[in-house]
Every structure is written in C-alpha cells, then in structure tokens.
Amino acid sequence: MTSSTFNTGKIFNWRLQLTSRGQPLRLLNLLALPATGVLVFLLLWTVGARNIDTSLGKFPGPVAVWEQFGALYSEHQRSRDKEAAFYERQRERNARRLAEDPDYEAKIRDYTGKETFIDQIGTSLVTVMSGFLLAALIAIPLGIAIGLSPALNAACNPIIQVFKPVSPLAWLPLVTMVVSAVYATPDPIIAKSFINSMITVTLCCLWPMVINTAVGVASVDRDLLNVSKVLRLPALEHVRRIVLPASVPMIFTGMRLSLGVAWMVLIAAEMLAQNPGLGKFVWDEFQNGSSDSLARIMAAVVVIGFIGFLLDRSMLQLQRFFSWDKDTATH
Amino acid sequence: MSTLLDISQVGMEFPTPSGPFTALRDINLKIRQGEFVSLIGHSGCGKSTVLNIVAGLHRATSGGVILNGREVTEPGPERAVVFQNHSLLPWLTAYENVELAVKQVFRKRMSRPEIREWIDHNLELVHMTHAAHKRPGEISGGMKQRVGIARALAMQPKVLLMDEPFGALDALTRAHMQDSLMEIQADLKNTVIMITHDVDEAVLLSDRIVMMTNGPAATIGEVLDIDLERPRHRLELAGDSHYNHYRARVLKFLHERHAKPGLDRSQRQPAPVADETVQGSARDTGKVVDAA
Image (cartoon, rainbow over all chains, first blue to last red; front, side, top):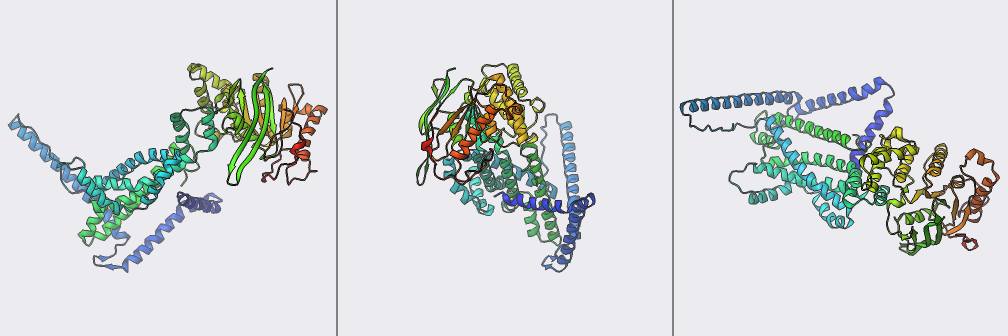
C-alpha cells in the first residue's frame, strides 16, 4: 500500500542521476525543467480556458485567477480593518458607559463579520489537524495492538478492509445525525459543523495509519525480537524499547498517507457540513455564481494543492527528524 | 574442570504438512567451564538449531539442556547470544546498545557510575571506545559485530553463544576479529559455543570442534580436541604440523565423509562452504563414531 508513493520517488531520483553528471545539468534539472513544465502548463491552461464557455462566462485563465488572489487578499485586509474598527468602537463605547456609571459591567461582543478566504484557510487547517490528530490517537495504539497480536489482527482485518474504501460523503450524513443527537447543547462552544467535518476526516484517515502501524509492528526484525527475549525485557519495555522504535518508519509512512487522505476528505466534508473552511468557500462561490466565481474557485484549488503539498513536506520533515531509518524518509 | 553445560539427548522435530520433520536427533555434549567449543557442519545441518535450543529461543522436542544444574526453558542473559548479523538496535548508538543490556541485567546490582564504567569497559574490550556514540548505520560491519560482542560480554554470561559471528565479514576483517576474540578470551576465560563454517576459524579458536553430520536427523559426527598451546598466532600456526593435522581432520570430515550431497567428493576446497541448496537424504550416518 505504500509502494506506489515510494516507487515514483525512486524513478524520479534515478532519472535525475542519469542526466546529472555536472553542475550545470543539475541546475537544469532542479530549476529549469520544473520551470518549463509550469510554463507549458500555464500556456495550455490559457489556451484551453479561452475555448471553454460556461454559463458564468469564460473559464478563468491564469491571469484571472492571479487577479482573484489579489482581490481575496485585499478583501481580507478590509475585513481585518473593519474588525479592528468594530472593537475600537466597542472599547470607546464601553469606556464612555463606564465613565458615566462606575457600576456598569462592560460586555464584549465578538465581531460577527464573514470569514475571509484567509480565515477559511485557517479553519481548514485547524479542522484537518484536529481530525488527523484524533485519528492518530486512535490508530497508532490500535495498530500496535493489532501488530502485536495475530489474533486481534484476524479479528479486526475484515472491519478494516471494509471501512477503508468508504467515501467521506457516505459517512457524513451519519456523523451529522449522531453528532446532533449526542452533542445537543443550545449554545455549543465548538461548532457542530466543525465536529462533523473533523469526525469525518478522522473516520477516513484512520485506516492507513492503523494498517501501516500494524504492518510495521508485525514485521519487526526477528533478530531484534530475539535480543529482547535474551534480555528478558518485560512486555511494556519490549514495546517501548524495541517494537515502537523499530516501527517508527512505518508509522510515519502511515501518518503521511493519512494526512494526505485527511486533506482530500476535508474539502468534501466542509462542503457538505458547511464548516467555514476552504470546502465551504468553494461551495459558496459555486452557489454564488458571480462572474468571478470560477476564478475564485480556481484560486482555492491552487491553494488547496499548495497546502496539501506543504502538509506532506512537513510530515516528511517530521519523519526525517524522528526516524532513525533515513532511507525510508526520502521523497 | 566440571561440566557447566550439559546437552543431553536433544532432538528436534518440526511439524510439516507431510508429517514431522526430524532436524536433530541424539545430540549429546558436555561443555566445561571456560571451554571454547565450535560447532561446524554444512549449512542446513541444524547447527543454529542447537545453538537456539541452548539459548532457549527454541524448545527441544526431546531431551534437554542443563546449565549449572538448572534446565534451560527460556532465553536469558546468562546465555547471551552474538547473532550473525549483529542485530544491534539501529536507532541506538553503540553505547546505548550496550547500555540497554547492562541496565536490564545489572540495574539492581550496580549504581549509575558503575553502569557507565562497565559499559565503557566492555566497549574498550572490543576496541570500540572511539565510536561509542555512533549508530550502527554509521560504522562498518566488523565494528557492528564488535559492539554485538561487547553487548553480549557485558551481560557477563555463563555461556557466550555465537552464531557465525564473523560469517558476514570479509576475510581480513574476520581474521582481525578472530585475533580480538582470542585476546578477550584469554582475558575473561568465558565459556563459548560458536557456530562456524570456517575450518581455519574453528581450529584457531577452539578447544574442541564438534562436527555435525548432514541433516535431516543431523547429529554429532565427531568431536575433535584441539591441543594447541595458547596464545595461538595464525602465522606461526600456518606451518605447524599439529595445526595442519587438525585442519585436515575437519576438512576430511566435511568433504569426504559428510560431503554435502551435490558437491563433488574430490573437491577439497577450504571452508567456508557456502552452498545453500536444500539437503537431500542423510549419508552414512551409521559409520560415525559418537565421540561425545
């Protein structure tokens, strides 16, 4: 299940080595070729976009999308200014009331303006990390238990195999109903839409971590297990000193795959759960249907891609930092 | 000297779909305190199984092993093992690898400074002090094996079990390691059981060489006492007639009387014999004198 990610990396690496005999060639490989790829893509996009007519006008080309990035950022700036002004007015009003009546208890009201694109990125990141961490908290101990016990593995395997391929969209209605029933407070501190999205993310990104952790734990080198036996390490020490460190590379591989799944699932979950993140942004723009909508959605697509890439790279850095096996922590 | 380790009537059967497979039968061997015993035989003859039974990693299906008057039923640090491929924990440094063993064995008996000193002492013994804080991935195969030996020695085992400890090393490194091992052995006088493929290694290091017949149902074919003065030096011994006599005895056993099926009988190549083909039927085990 992990081979595909690593194989592509290796092929890529091998090609680089084939042509990189000298410094200039390496520079070409590292900068010039990717830049050319991007340029060709932008060209194809521009040409293609001109030829696609939609009910909302022409499909946006790179320039239109670039303009929307600017627009989205200045909207964010304006909103921040408004928010600052709102709190400033509130502070002044409260100060005035307090001066008139020393017993007056100042009420601080939150700013209720619409979330900007950048706020939504933040919400998405918080949601995906919460869902991912919750999944990790469940999946890693479960994976260790399954990996240690062939009996538990046999018992859990059918469930894992069946639930693993389930789409988030299938889970979401169930999650929504259950959350509404269980988490029934009139004034929730945490928004239900957030919880719905988070749990959906958790349910979908649980499996790669469970499977990889279990495989890592079950395939610890027999010699290392024998070392543990000769030393008569007690069960807990055995897990802590031998099994866990030995399976760290596989655990991280699972975490990386899971985070990728989590980010993909999140966008869909947010669309349906109306969690104020990037998924909701895309959905709202789609419903909104202004002449800028497609360009704004395309901008969101690019941002989603970039964040996904950055999340993966961060996991890789974490893996490099924590894992003793530097060989598996490439690409 | 009295018997420290008594292997008596050990037999081993593995269940297979076509009925039980007898790997070992009637293994009888008494080992004295401080003795260096080599087990030699073709690959697949069950040498490692014998070692694993002594280590407690396998349970014999018949017979048993008695160490110091107590039956061996499970693995333990008093029978430390040096594995063929070092089996150091790759995420720990050389020092930490030894430390794990020392802490596990001596935690209750040693203070912290004593533990540190004992680890340093054992790394010193195998000449690894300079690389104490390197991880296995950063040191050579020979160095890893040294650390593996330091870890085993640091447990102060009653019997040190070595499973082809130098099998994966190149010839020069191997010779160097053998010299180091002899040096340590002269110092500590451990009781050692070592598995080897290498006739020269066996003769050079051992007090006794236990030669095993081919499997299935492998057993001890012959036991050869090596009566050579210690300390032994490989260069002096190369021309020594006793040494060459012992060497010839082992070679004859391995290549004439118990030639591996499929190998030419006249082929008298020196060990190691690295043929991994599956064993055929046992040959003329009846002729063998059980010298145990």
